[in-house]
Amino acid sequence: MLALSISEKAKEKALELMKADQLDDSYFIRISVLAGGCSGLTYKMNFDNQLKEDDEVVIDKGMKLVTDPASVLYLYGTTLDFSDGLNGKGFHFVNPNASRTCGCGESFAL
Image (cartoon, rainbow, N blue to C red; front, side, top):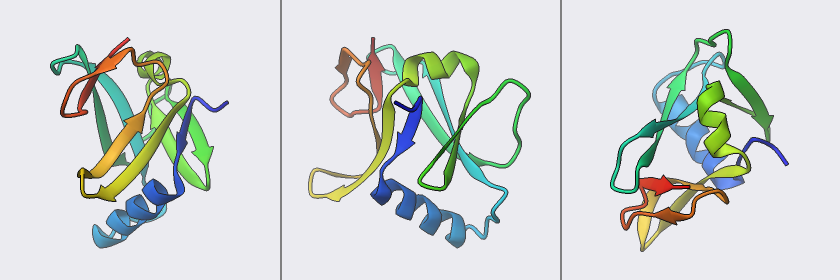
């Protein structure tokens, strides 16, 4: 099991957004877990092209996913997914470690 993975749908959407923002192949998805949100922890995701010395790097489906050493502890086994259904549109995380999530899906607890 990978520390992080990405669904095919999320990969396609990320590549679409990177192209729209005219980002080159040096960019990757950075995922972090921060204190906050109504459940205690929240996800942060952005495009970045600067690796830090202690970053954890995972390549899944040809997409580079990067996180810091503290966040990877919360993210082990998590899949970044994308939904465009009637119940909400956007990126979301499928985290097997989360014991509960908030109603909006933006934060979680272990």
